[in-house]
Length: 322
Image (cartoon, rainbow, N blue to C red; front, side, top):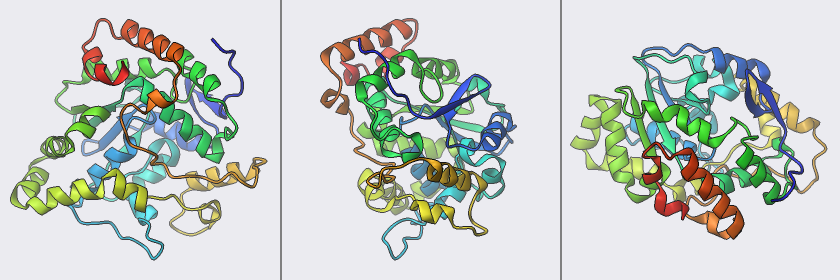
C-alpha cells in the first residue's frame, strides 16, 4: 500500500467533497434545490456514464434531431448545456435556462437531494475498477483539478478511502440501490449500455413517457439517430468543451458557474502544456486491466464484495471486475 500523496483540488460542503473550481454558491443551490414534478434527473457517481446518458436523453427529447454542429465540427455546447445542465456546477441558473423537456445532471447521493415522488430519476452505475481509472484520467486532464502531475497509485488510495469528490463510491452506490425499483427511478449500468444500447434507449424512452416511446416505435430512424448521435465515436468527434478563453467571454449565454471555473483555472499556476481535454476518453469496459496492479485489483475486488455482500449489485458487473 502506497502512502497517499497529492490530491486533486477539493472543497467540502455539508459533508460532500466537491471540486474547488465549482462556485460554492452554485453548489449550495444544488444541495437545496427542491425537485419539481416534471423534472428528470441523471444521477451518477462521477465517471459512470453521465455524459453518455446526457446525450441519450437529449436526443430522446429531440426525437433524434441532431444538435447544431458548428464550423469547427463541434456540437454547440451552449445548446447542450441548456438541455442537460449540471446543477452542481450551474446552480439555479442552469435550471432557469434549461430547455423543456430537458434533464438535470447531478452527482449527489440520494440522501443529499430534495426529491419529489413525481420527478423522474435515471441512475447509472459502473464497475468500480473502470470508474477509478476513468476518474483518475478525468482529474488529470482537467486543469481545474490541479492534478496534471498526479500519480495513479496515490489516486487509487484516495478512491479506496472515499476521499474524492462526492465521497466514497460504494456509499454513493448504496444510497441509490434501495430505490432502484421505485416507480420514478430507472436504473441501468454502464456495462449494460455497452452490451445493449438499443435496448437501453427503448427502455429509457418507455420510462420517460408515451410521447417518446411512440416516437421510436413509429419511425425507426428516430431510434437509429438517438443511438448514432449518442455513440462514443460521435461524441469523441463532436463533443468538445470551449477553450479557457471561450469560457471567460462575457455574454448573455455565459453562466456564472462557468465564469467561476474559468477564473479559478486562471488563478492556478498552469504549465503551458496543460490544456483541458475531452470529457469522452475511451468508453470501453475492462480498461482497468491496463492500469491497476494485481495487488490493487485484488484489494478493490475484496472491498467490492465486502460492501455489496447483502445486495445483488455483485451480479451487475461481476465479469467486468474480475
